Image 1 (spheres, rainbow, N blue to C red):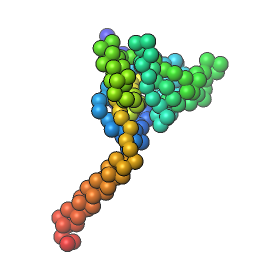
Image 2 (image 1 turned 90 degrees about the horizontal axis):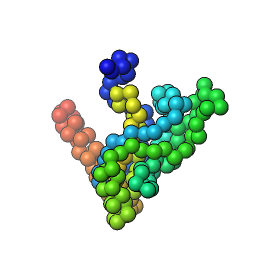
Image 3 (image 1 turned 30 degrees about the vertical axis):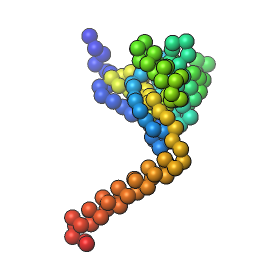
Length: 161
């Protein structure tokens, strides 16, 4: 029987918006996280940072490095390390497939979002390639052109042109 107090749906904790700007995202996965008690309480308070995070596959297991979950304020000596390495829970086939791509083609594993799904902490990870500076300029120019197009369309619909 399911616990009635568990929330349903998806409660966002943190997002890594900079990752979509700095990387070409090729594939995404949802992974569970192995956490300590004070980490879960700190996440429930909505405190985490994904900016410096990255994933690594070592000995057939996936790990998340550099994600900052601050210490729980009410915690005692049982508190966790804020930047400790956390294990990600993935299927063997997913781990093997991503490990091949990371080793062969120069991809990196980047966390995109951290959230609770049905009461369990999940991380959305992406298989990504770094963008060059001219790619970033092109994407910014395309975004700016799209914004101007939407503004012009809005003005025209309002009868301002």
